Amino acid sequence: MPALDDRCPFCPGNERMLPSIIMETPGQGQGNVDWQVRVVPNKFPALTPGVDQARLKEGIYLSMPGYGRHEVIIESPFHNRDLVIMSREEVETLVEVYHRRYVKLMREKQNMMVVIFRNHGPRAGTSLVHPHSQLIATGLVPGHVRLREREAERYFDETGRCVYCDILEFEGLDRRRVILENRSFLAFVPYAAEVPFEIWIVPRKHRAGFGAVPGDEKIDLAHALQEILAKLHARLDDPDYNYVINSWARYKADEPHLHWYLQVRPRLTTTAGFEIATGIRINPSLPEQDADYLKGR
Image (cartoon, rainbow, N blue to C red; front, side, top):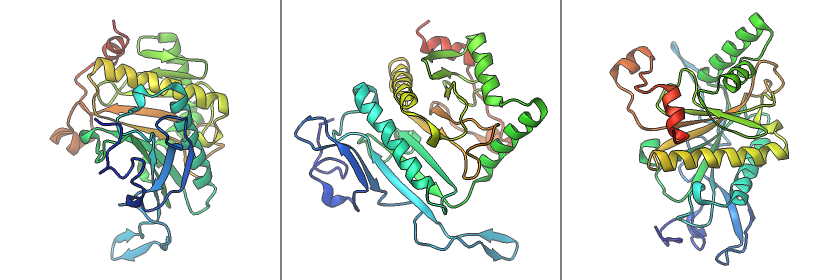
């Protein structure tokens, strides 16, 4: 692909195609571009601010207007500079922007949670190839998230320990599913991975929310994330994937049973009838073999 595409709204010189610019970081002197990471409103947002958050009752049904914020994080000015080939400093800047926007939007009391995610490839839901991530702030907490919170709380009430800390400790000792580690993070294929080559990047330090991550851990997260994506790119021929930062909802940031992490899910299989009917995932590969393959064994 070209470094710049005059039809792409995310490329420098095409700012007329953007709704507006929320923030940007200074450029690094490449190609006479004066920005490195840029945040813009999504032109076709899933949720929008400025609408009422009141719940509505219609017979047995409950609904609410689509309140929220939907932003696009343009990861590089260059159309062909995917995350795996960026410099470490560029990825560090990206993670710093993730953190700034997360903290900023979680300060707005009407936002109950903030989700940061990246869709890579058509099977993962991306519509523009220019490297970008997205952020959505919601005015409610989905039941899917509440279920994870409740299960973690149940484990804590029974054992007095964080389930994620226990998983981290076990995987660090067992080693069969570990792919890489640094001073702040352990990356591994989960014991019961739902899809082939699913990876969790889990912070060693117990913190419920992504917003509390200090500067040195943000740097380590950037390095771990880029290394994991590079392994997927090299060993699986640049697969489509999604990654998401699983943090926790408002009023839960100090709970002792919650622990944020980043989850990567390659799109190598298709959800079929049995899985839709039962919620049971069929994963045709073993996590231990997936980990060995990604490590080049």
